[in-house]
Image 1 (cartoon, helix red, strand yellow):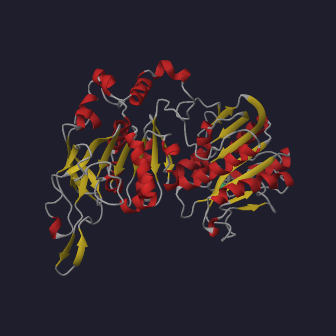
Image 2 (cartoon, protein in one colour):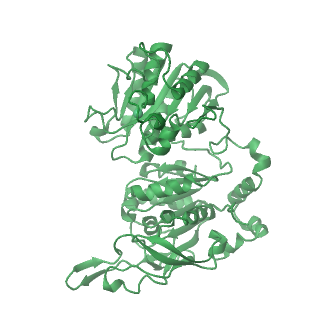
Image 3 (cartoon, helix red, strand yellow):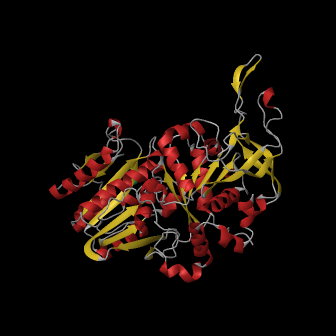
Length: 529
Ligand SMILES: [Zn+2]
């Protein structure tokens, strides 16, 4: 409880919080005067320019330059709006330490398509000739780009006279087992130089793909389609250009962006622009005014859980986030973040996917001052109840198995479909959420918790109580009402918040999750007076 009260008193805060938190608090408080000296971050860095400034489809582009001379590489992501991983990876590589040469990056080429999760350029979606942005670039039939957006991208390429171009895409299935899709491939027009570059990328990424049916292949016989950006660069400009394709079928965004990073990192190393492997560089190494959140999206995270959290995080201008998976549960990856957010889905599947070694790394992250927020399944994961849980907050879960006459043995965690319940914020919630009183919140089988048995863990503070309940079986009656819906606690130098219901899926309550993230990161909420 003490830790929460501190937030109300700036002087106490500065005296008592750990140095990392102090630093970040100062960064937020002094943003206006320190911005120029901060490391670059996509959250704040001004783009180098905007394509189509003023147009509905306007999209920013960025330059990342090394200190020494070297090649120029154009990287495009999100040409197809339903292929988000390329766009996400393109944003992440804005933080890479380029040593030589220059990267020109257009992370959201088809920005309107990305926003609509639509393959086509949305304004032309009903025109079969012009709806596909990647068929509008110069060919032998049409010497000029056919649409305003393709012309803007092509002009940017011409202006920078690149030596290479990389276009990041995703396929709907693995090409190695389904030739109808180009998923998990490197697409280019054959030449010995391009063969060598492609092979080095394939070698590195395929070492990380244990399933033979998901291995990457090279597609160089027919090369990229006529009218595509890569084909135009190869034919009209004579440069080495590649489409890098991951596969969105049955693979989380964290894995697909990681594969894009592996491919691009290998490529940039091959042409001597970077000295270190950057496949595990997801963002800025220093907090630059924004709270950096790692959103877990791998096994055990439901797509609704992930999407609702990502929408909520996207709406907060002071928060940046990246998707992370089980493979990212490593110290050198988590140290790039202030908070790890575990969303809805299955807590046991999440816990088992990251394994005991991953769980220990998450605990170490929190001990060292990181924040952990668990929502629903994520709250089960945070508990001190299971052999697969994180044991970062001292909660036990009501989950006993009961023999019910005429039905059979039933585990009591299951209470049926999602429903709204009443939730009342406690007095301590004022300092974390800036809220009081009762609200309706969506609930879907989140943990019903009580004090756990781990005496090593610090005391918890209840931030909200359930004031009504959902029951499916008679023995559940009376077991949910007046139990904690949201709790917080310290863990080492870090902080944990366990949220049993789904405020991120309750219209109007989304800020509860972003406030929880700020509190667990130890930063003042800009919305609070
Ligand atoms: Zn595509």
